[in-house]
Image 1 (tube, rainbow over the protein chains, first blue to last red):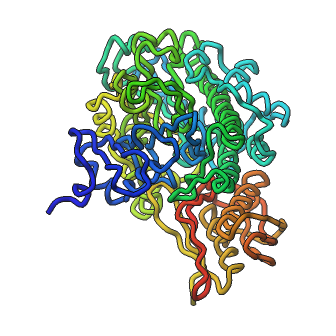
Image 2: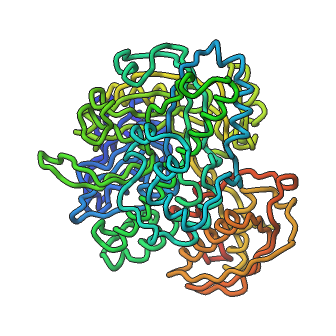
Length: 486
Length: 138
């Protein structure tokens, strides 16, 4: 018997599957899923096709409603979804960015080797755990007034560097140089600010983490060298967090606001969480400026955490930052909307690219990537689950042509949190990780079970699809040896 | 005995279905369901209260606004609520008093962080008693 999805999906090639526009009346464009055949049955079970199809209803959407191979069921937009809408007459949707605005990843490299770090891993993780506030309800060590928060919202990473957290070199290798333009704190509710003030400089909980990793494989030595990475066994640090309660509140506020004006703009959508407004409308512009504030909050947040990571390493290893080579490789956003130039049907077009659980993947030579990576393409940071591995990939020309310069963002969930907790206990997960040489520290054992490897797709398979489809190319694989789970 | 609420499985997030003889009860039980995700309600005492008054365009939006207001209070004032008196509820207005206490790490084991209530799969069903459904982003 044919699989149920075979009646709906049109196979383009081994890694591309189209949802025809005729699948649901009201779709303005077809859907396109990047996946291997073996991934499709799970994608089908989750009915995530429906969400890809629903996104295709957004007014002004162009080309395709796209899904990356780590796609899973979200609310409104699927997680792993990319949609570009015309700026001229299309819409912007806060649900297409998500609650954790600019949830993203920052990668630091070190000169340290496995032989130097492994014997002291418990010590390093313990110090990081004290130094970097994490977990539910944690508050930061940074105290800002509401007035100073406004500066954070406008300046992003630069605010943190001016306060002594990290250095200018970090900013250069951050998407948007860690500061999205057009941020106006006046368009952010006082509720969002109240949530944001105590949480600045915190890792948070859920899927957020800090990981110490070893390079396991190098696929492209030249590109790795350009990123300051020379050898297998070299130690990296990966930071995964976002805009905390500040971003959550901005999203909640604007989903409610935009949901209320849909009728005014004649917008009719199959899911209320897709609430949107024309990019050019006052409400759409207000959302974009508030979103930029949240994106900047997240960059400032990761910038502060970077500083404390360096602090802890200097303290534990008794060497200077320079000796440790603790330099930032790159920082990417996984949940964001950006106004970008793309070529659609042979014509240059200004679009609003929504990346919801997807990573920008610009090719070599693109003016928006830092000089140091201009020759190789933009680094794409793809964390897997805490038991498997993570990847560093690079953006490609094909991504520009086919996915609005976007690729996957992680492994993608396979199991619900409740199912993971039913089948696994946090203590067992911790023991399994320890047996595999991974030291874990967490504020919540329940959260550890929810984030176990078994709950995620295999990131190797996800990255393989994006690599073979050509929307990013893998350069480095790294495996964890120490994890802090919020 | 009829259940007050149940938890729904969802790959990335968590949903709840809450029941009540009337819509006020169902809204109160939805709030209980929310805080049961965050901590064990048996460990929470009724030491303080907060009054909430909200307006929204319709009942479904009101449910989202109600739960988001409680998430906001948890985030900013660190209050866990366990009992809710919804004293007024019509299509566009809600008035309620919520009872609970501040989080103490030695007393309350925090389980799951909840970012927000979403409009996805949102339902308010008033046939044969009341049943409401919400999906949270966690």
